[in-house]
Length: 377
Image (cartoon, rainbow, N blue to C red; front, side, top):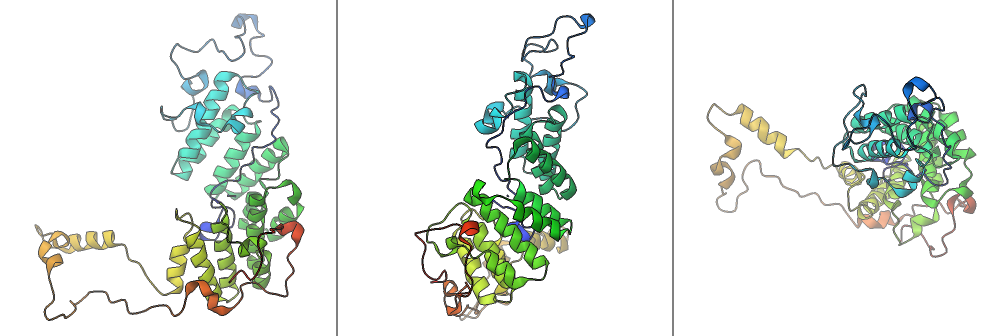
């Protein structure tokens, strides 16, 4: 599910980045008549001979492919800088059942969707691909993930169910379960989590499922259970994985929901250390716990300029910024930071973040032979 930001709709624990569900897909050749694989195409003698596979008689020299150049096409235009070769080779292999030009067009839509900074634009690109090849698993996956990222929970469920039927993969389950959770159908969400065959999922997907399950338990009012769900061996490991920041963040969130604020502070700190790129908002959460409010200085400067008389720019007045205080006195308005957190954030208040009475299910939570000892030590 996202890490990446994966499922769990709370703050940045929601699955903003999709699971890679492209493995093991067996394309169904000629499955989509709207994608140019209709057996009737070219069968009418009035239409002339049928083009060779991968070609189209409407294509002009130098064009990008007939499907991208159709004037009736709706949706955003794919930037010229986007190339079909940028699509992941595993994903591109799933387009192998389509004519070459069509596969290139769809590949460019999928690449553009992945590069789009605005989730709505990314969603529009995936819908354009869907109009061309609605029976290809990777296309349904892309639409489902984009729908999830834009809060279209019901559509995300429908598209990912279709992708699951086409691919046979359970990698979609974290997002599907979290979409059910978003719709308030907690029993259905939990049923999706439990029906997964974890033996077929890689560890990243197993962790994503546990993060979603923890969120479901919180929504059910079972705060202690939400904590227990995430008590996995990787919490005690000194080795960081790509998904460690998300796991630490979700665990901190669960601890906070259970009223264990000191331990939550410790795990938010660990999430920050494991997240140098700032993919989560762990730093903001920690500041909230410490009562620190960070104001937007740019907005303050704009407000100051708006309030200034005509012709005056107080925010840009060097005299304002260059004022110095006399005899070591602090200027009025200068911020004093005298509040320092007591103790070491990494200590967790000396308390163990894991309940000793809880036995971790080895089958669901893995076995890490290198991990031992208390996770808070």
